[in-house]
Length: 397
Ligand code: SAH
Ligand code: TYD
Image (tube, rainbow, N blue to C red; front, side):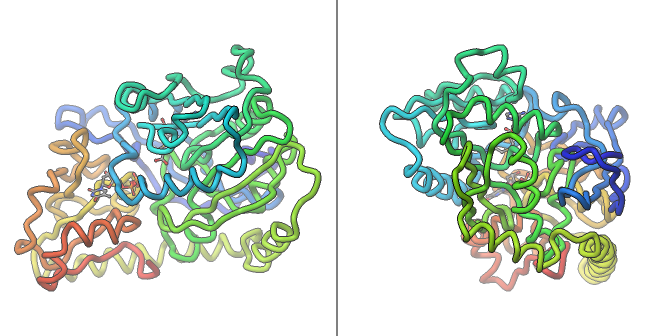
């Protein structure tokens, strides 16, 4: 396998085994035909890009049945309002804004009074952005073909924004070239993604699944985008999704600020550009798997089966990597109508409406949506007050 960015041979593979699509929640009659692939990640010692060695076709993941609706979290609604405020410095009243992967419009709706366009391949969520929020959205994948076939999209945008999408796009050079072509000179590209540094520190290997083809760092982002005249000129650490990074790039910047040069150096000092760090991460994942499975076995022996909360994409990696099924977990509570009354990918644990979560029934619950702890704690305050405890798949969370 070669690096998806610089085409050199990859090694140091972290193997998570046979994995289903993270967001393919199933009905019983679909169990037999379930799709699996090998979930393995590797690190490029030249450009420092952490990446999956293979990934399913985009159309398999992003289509009319995509069950992730961004508006599910109030915390994220508030976060994206702040994202908008942050980007105001890049735009004036006649500016044009493009969002890559706008989903149900959670971020783009803040730019409604500007000339805007969302590009979103998953039809169900794109339709919500269009119909509920009255936004301009193209139901398509953002890539070079799209830009080259739509002359109006070329050299047209003052600001391109994206959140939790760029790491989903396998042909990263194609994406970078497409962004560069559609931005005006001097225009800004602002995107944020789960951060490699946090994943390594928290051993939150659950951020690794079919859709998350990359885990970026400042160094890898700089190396990918500079080839296309997109310079990393700023960054801002975020707490969302268990630890993210916002990257601010500018087309043909005249100067790279000291703040960025220092941060790149600090990342290197912390080992985020070193193969040794990835080797350690691989061992840490194996240790956390053992820790979690043993802990769960003890708990189940004492209390019987327990429940989980949040049928996240991330939980698909945990359940399948740790080989945890319905013998240990009776159900996963969740708010998403498209997931409720279906079964989790691979391990086929029932998904139950969160309204059926009764605090008196539970002492210990696995929180798969650990990144939404504050929001969920507030909703389930009776569970906490009653002595209930959330547990996690990693002792470092
Ligand atoms: N930005 C939202 C959605 C993130 S989920 C948020 O942060 O909540 C990832 C989204 O990326 C999905 O809606 C998916 O359909 C979209 N996506 C995947 N590949 C894409 C591509 N090539 N171009 C544009 N959007 C894409
Ligand atoms: P998220 O961490 O965004 O998911 P992913 O790992 O797929 O990126 O969490 C979204 C899921 O968590 C979604 O299935 C809905 C569920 N959820 C709840 O059940 N209750 C809540 O209060 C929140 C915020 C999310």
